[in-house]
Amino acid sequence: MDKITKGRFIGKTAIITGAGQGIGFEIAHQLAAEGATVLLNDIDEALTAHAATRINAVGRCLPCPGDSGDLAFIEGIVDRAVTETGTLDIVIANAGITLFGDFLSYAPESFHKVMAVNLGGTFFLAQAAAKQLIRQGRGGSLLFTSSVTGHQAHKDLAAYGMSKAALEMLAKNLVVELSPYGINVNTVAPGATLTERTAADAAYAATWASITPMGRAARPDDIAAAALFLVGDSARHITGQTLIVDGGWTTVSPSPY
Image (cartoon, rainbow, N blue to C red; front, side, top):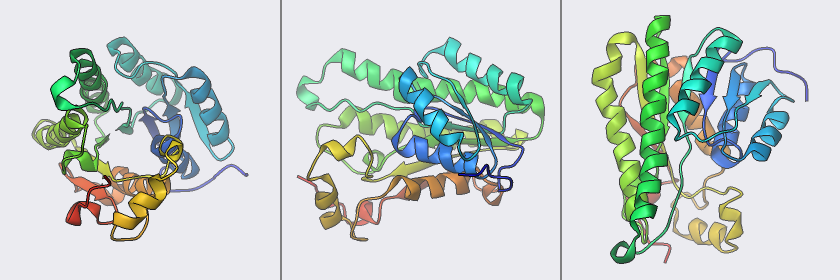
């Protein structure tokens, strides 16, 4: 495929974590296809390299393997963005982990791991990025990836759902902290989505199609379209908001079990 030469994000640099596959990959792919230089992170080094190679067929993507919950790595990826491109404009904290478990027997180590990645990684990436955006003095966009489980109870996901609801509150709070600098902060909350991970469940697509008002589970490009809107110039006056992309599931909330 030919390199993209024009688009909404020409001249901009974006960081996205947890983007080796699935929703994160598609967001990174679409950003690069619209002209952004993308620093793509995943904890899996081989997956990061493969994803970056695919995206480099349509734009510019720099692979950045590492632990997005590690403070030194977080600071390093922000520095690399500026060193290699001269700017930082968009940061999408997409990395997260899901550890299912019954509330009554949920292990402390599982709880702390979910919080460290889903909350700690997002919080400190936003902090490091915001400092850079403030230094640049041109504003910018932060986007967090939440989930419908932050809105509706879901079996065996008490810790995960709690972490996702907290991200939405973080976005609201940062309106107070970052609006004076022209930085908007929003959250996208995907519903059931067909990715490499969910493909392991043979019944997933049919189950969610049957209980989703729009008649199907989401595809990664559905979520990516919402994400690109929220970090684009058309959404500059939108901040502190969560955009749910779930085909209407949270409106009616039938259980998949």
